[in-house]
Image: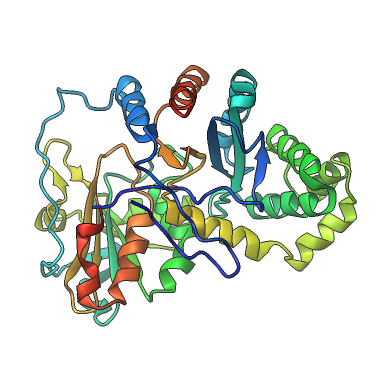
Length: 210
Length: 182
């Protein structure tokens, strides 16, 4: 199996043969040996995120004190919904910072990224200012987690949103979704790939390539 | 779902330490002003020493300007130094910046460039003209497509490494991959 992508002009085609190397299995073992993140005491209340093909549940959530944003505001263009557990994760390369830094990549697809957590609007404002985020953060604060629940992206045990990603097309249909382990920042590659596929005919979106 | 997280193959445009015939390749997507990259720097240095010629190390730019106001210029300065002084100068600049993460303003970058053996004023002129801005954006965008999710992100033989970044774990992971690659 190979992943071949055209990079920028004049750059070589990226090409990597995975099956030829046992690296993946080795690295996987290394992670579980030392990661210790799969603690058995953790409540196994994982819900499945709404799958591709589902109509995205509508919502209207505060983006700042006194301001609201609804899914309908983005009719006709793709929206990325990035549910995440909490503001102030203690890493500088955190997920929202990454998406903010990547906004020009998302803009190429006319896509808007909305970060959603159960933190309140004032918390989002402080977080956004502190991290210099140029990204809309929404508060799924009251009733707490309601929208996250509708998307199958709520962790009942923790009382926070899961780390779940949805790419919604201009007609309000979920075209890609992904649930990441809480402790793993899923990055942006899946989102960018899904956005790229939006521009292609339906028949090309078969997931059989993996 | 294809959650591959595969880094682009190493090319002639990469900054590389070690030989193409090395048993295992470690790619770092890094940001010269990121404190986590700063902490990883001496660790990766020792890892390189321990693996010796079994390891090829590659550094790629992933400056997160939102968090680090000097990250973009630091990355551009490294490219300018490389263009002017070659690989040796690039790695000298790479080390100097990681060793002086708290002083990465343009003046300091000019001084480090001079220490790395190139014309510091020329490097500052390149920064003003934004000569390497496009190249850095390209590296950033291709990193994002490969699954870089913060800095530093490491790839071992092209596959994203999400494990702990302490010296022993890294050496063990790299040695295992190296042992299987013959």
